[in-house]
Image (cartoon, rainbow, N blue to C red; front, side):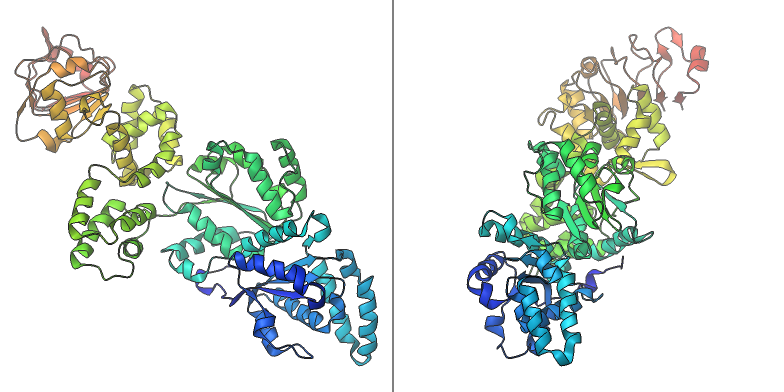
Length: 639
């Protein structure tokens, strides 16, 4: 399969060229078809308006055929009697077979059967008898006409007799042709950073023998542009295949009470033109797909898959598809893609700085000259978006035309409340997790980003969260990645989505949230005694309280019966500390102010216990530190 590039996408002045016998169809079928195509925005060459007809085909008409993306041949009873039509057909077939032209041909059998055209019987036989008489000196020309008729009649097309009425016939033709009209080059130019992604994905599609059936996955977080990339590839190369289908928004449509059967019907209609009521259950769909597409070279895109069953029902086996077919699947779940047997999984990166700036400027400033202060503020937006196309588009569109003060206010608000359009897309991946995976994700988002995988696994394993499989699932679903030195990392907006999920547990009262990581929230909870059994973790970076002792009440801790993780510093407790949760698995208290721990506290399941620069003399009253030092030598630190 030849490689393509967005820069060298052919440009056609016309979307379609109509070849027909005027006397048979011009004032009836052709006029209706032309109107329907025009109504769909398909630019059809109209020889009535643009060329004068003469005795022979003109250079202008030949040029119009060359300049058309699609040729539609309407075969009627008297088509073959017109040498003009036959000469048009010769030129059309030449363009179809020219490698660098890529013209698509659609035959329509209006009131004549394909076998009549193919074998030149009936009215076609009569026409050719006259041609052979008229062109006795040039029978090679007649033979050429016969050959192109046979070639085009062998292409899958439409027969009027298979339809109940002409309007339904025209509607199906228009829908099929619409699906073959690619995105205009001007539109593609607006897709920033798409060219390099297209080239990388196309190279994966082209690996191996051309007649292989290849399945390629596209994987990444929401808002990264997976569907956009798949759509661009589909629009640019679908003409290279005998049939094509783009099954969009699988997850959303099935969640909204849709059925995979509707996608099976769509696939069969778009590729085989089977009636949409030809299947009534998934099993029938599988059987038809598995038997009817075996000899067709198809391009199939299955977008936003969340369940392996969806792939099994729509592209169950390579053997379902003909040689050279390509199946592209987009998903946020890398494991799902590999499980189904993808040949390759392409993982697009976020946009680089240059592309991110270009995309944001296109949305934020469009045609007006931007204010200098807004240009400077753009840098903050770029840092916030982190190269995620969705965020850049949403924020750029929102800021377009607003004043400098509104820009500043928006940037401040982002720190408190991220845009719903961004968060709702990102949260789809979170919503699909199991409960333990959600807990692991929130712990990492709130507490453990940039910590090593081994360290985090040790802590979370002690909490009973099964982090070995859980962290792997988060990686497969593009919510987490592993960076240098085996450290856990997630995109800033993914982390912000985790923070937002926790904040929404109790928007007004931090003491009723499961995790606390901000100094102000922790200070509020410990000073106002608003802790609750909901709180599972309090972990504040060392820099927050370090330097100044903060005098707080310990009463709030008595309400936090499910506290698993506690990391604070420089918190003074004038009234002492009577209670800490026995669920604690991590206890890290820099400059712990008391001489002993609460008597209720059991540390037998704690895996990290740090009391750096603490005043502790006894773990519990009456039990000296040195007497049990051997027990804690591996899990606690005193300095």
